[in-house]
Image (cartoon, rainbow, N blue to C red; front, side, top):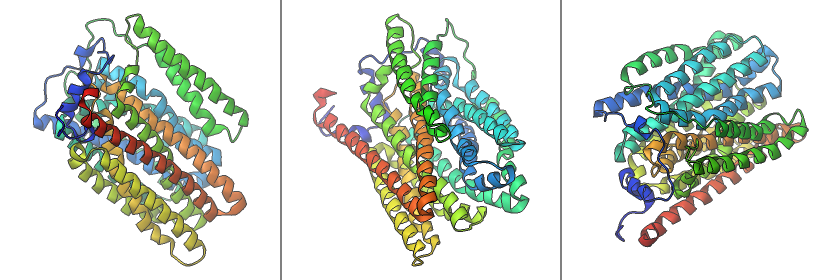
Length: 510
């Protein structure tokens, strides 16, 4: 690589693939030929992307809309704080457990069919949630929704990696980021409108039932527009590594469960030791399985790709912190300041719209600006968090209106567009296409683990401090904790950016 070549965080994806071809030990899957589908025309690629984005919109609205309907669920179903935590964290729990296995299955058996199966499960579970008779039934439905979302999400990443290259891939991730921002924007507002229109009980139920027509239409269009064949009949025996799959799923579940339920039973913290043992066994098994000549569910050598390992850590840290912002704001303005569900949705609307805008811009420049977009985004998030803390404290003293949160949260929304989708593109940029499903699953698992842990821990801090010191202090301390996690995200992003410069300045080390 010549000395004047751009750093790795500004290298086009097709150039990065050349680097990966020389990377040690990144094995090719036994069914790599299954991922070889005819090249799509430009029109075919954008039809494919429209299906993927429609389904992502459905699944993401279902996440963001819940934040403003929690008080309605609590009042109409008599749900406890633990029940409400499960509504939020249970979805992320099952989502995280199935992601990697789903990505691997898509790599081997066909991403199209796995995608459709995930959409069908998600849609059926939405019906169950909409007609739930008690908190237990609602949370069971949320668990199943998490499974459906976990099945379909790695296929979205895998198909973008497979069918889009270079600058087009960056634009595809930019559109994905725009959908993320728009769904975050419309979800709380839509939830507030439905509750105001239909009342608390019918309102929160309808927030799940609106997924049904979207899911049905998406399945029909997917059968027409997704690349064929949807299901790839393997030419040889397919090895899904069932032992490795079970070990990883059990390890993730054992790790996440205490963060969700340990407030009810502190003895559950002992499961963390069990989780570490299971994850260590999983690593041992994957290495042993490969030495036997079989194909492990995850190529552990993927973590030798620095952009992938660093990006996975960035995703986990960022989601561990910032995912709680929108939950806390929705709870605070409704319970402490008497906002309606609609007003709670509106206060985060500018932030979500800025997220959609910045994601679209980032998609155009991610292949040239690279990790600098993520660094700028984390700085914007940190500034927004500090401003939010100041507004909360000043509002508690009667100096400012709580509506100033419209401004401070906008900096956090702006940050999300510059962090989430660009980080996905940069993290997977050097990953071979045949490993993209399992790699995307690993990266999204870090997001889901971060989300579940962050929401469980930070909301526990919020409720605990609120009981003794009141809402403003609880918000301040919670946002300080989030700020620390954002600073940790910034540090990893800077490390990865500097590593990219060293790769250019010392090409002999590549």
